Length: 82
Image (cartoon, rainbow, N blue to C red):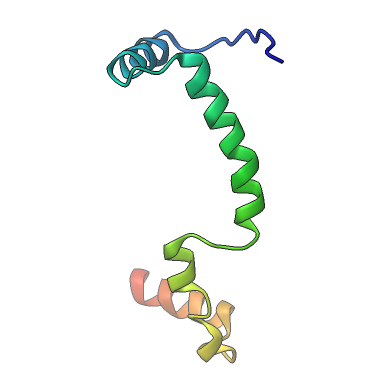
């Protein structure tokens, strides 16, 4: 069952979306529907996966558990400003 939905969007966004829609032979309604549907899919998959950069960085500081953040910050600022 389909229902109407009214959206208030920036005029430039609408122009770009209509252009994209025309060039790809897909209605704006279908684009919005697919996007909104993908949000629920992302929510489910987000729990299982992380962004590539996050994956690369995770665990990076495990080697430095003894690192004193306050002392490190102090030394960095001291070197920068003194």
